[in-house]
Length: 552
Ligand code: COM
Image (cartoon, rainbow, N blue to C red):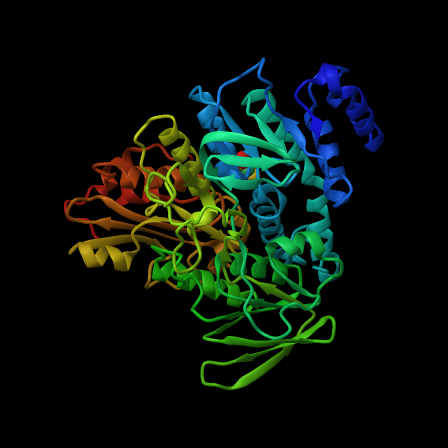
């Protein structure tokens, strides 16, 4: 056990150890007796992560009885987004929490293996796409695929990820005043008791937030070296892939496939369902889907729909895959890199003593209060199933905290704004055009390019990040649609492919779903910051004068 709570008493040897690990700028070197700085946390975490099995002592930030002798209101098992946000909220409400994580940092898989690297990779995909498209024009040199290395980008991420980790630990301890034990697995004894490094902690409630992990198809060869998922890609990739086969058609499959292909690693996606038609993605507009998939194909990504993976080939290391086409034909691709994006499931083995009810897919069943089938046990985040999104994880944790602290709080996450990346940022919220037409008899749309325009010459939409496309090949500059009920004039849905609109969709989703929604006239009254990435305000203004608005 390393006690990180009382710097003055305990830190001389810890600080000496951290200082031996590497240089920090003077501004990030804590004084003797002071709490660890972000940089010091980062060095410590980096050292622990880099030497698995060596640094096995837990990092304890637990109040002694002289500081706080109350029973814990909740123990959060897992310190990812749900556990961290739930803990912070519960603490802010005056409760007492303890957060436990097997990793030496708070924040969970997001900054370690998931959302943060995904965003780095998607930014690289966008940059590479532009550099390849613009090569030989302006100041852009001939695009040299050999300069773009998946391995190098993964290593860039790994070299930098301990700084976000350091921030999470520092913020949770110094700003949010959370109690936590890190780098130590929790053992669940019963619904009120958890054991860590031989010490038992009791709490009024448990909040389970240990996430989910990729499930692999059960086919021969799936365990060969060279088969990766989003997590093992970060931890285990040690060569530069030359050819990629993606198994699955999930968001992860589309995002990572777009990145790999953009680096010059020819990529084929093998998917059962058409992309963006999987059950876990809702409100996907057909026009948006068509544009996104067409643009992936335009970049050269092969998408094989209706296929079934039969076998990963290789002898110790992947050399290819065999798969069945929809008509039954068996095909083979030679490849040195297989990436699995078939979805995730939780590992519930540590909860066997609780007897939690689960659904047919293996997710923990939790009601809208985040209560499981076991009284006083809550569950949050990916553990309770899709959507595997950050807002849901964090708000589930907060929802559990609110209920534990006496509020009657329900969290409904059936409607939400959504996004994914290809080489574009793709965002949507509200209803698709087809959905709107099922419930409204007079639906119009504002769309760019319009259905009857030639997209090769219609150089709009264009805005942040797509101006160079608009002026060189308009088709590539993006796509947008606003779905409107012409009778009530209410905006029903918004859909966008381009760059820079993601933030706006968080607020658009709220405006569309609040009681009364937002009308196209109210939208037209907003003040655009031109060239606004999604163009919706001024496009509504062009039609707002019409008593009976029609398509634009
Ligand atoms: C974000 C992690 S990377 S958390 O949600 O802030 O804990």
